Image (cartoon, rainbow, N blue to C red):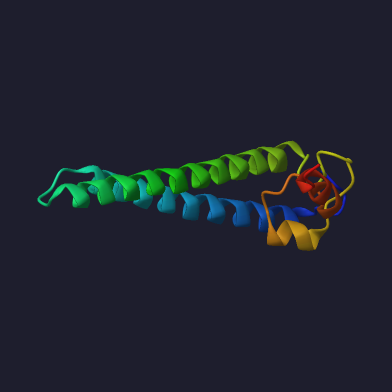
Length: 120
């Protein structure tokens, strides 16, 4: 772990990541419940059923994104536990505290993240 991560910072990021995980779990659970409700057969004509299927597909995609975010939070918690948290996975330099506070599950510093997002 980076020397700048004293016990106070370690606890701050552990709390942030756990709160993010809890929030995502609640959101995913709510999404799954909504998908089940939308997919359940009910009264109505054919367009109503088509609309419900479309909405269920959309909700499934949203839940998928949230599940990926949940995986990122879990990976960040593992990095925190192993001492690798706060170090860019690309350049191995420390990630700025401001970035970690803004995006606690980040794997990369701003510079490396920008380079990964450039479309050739």
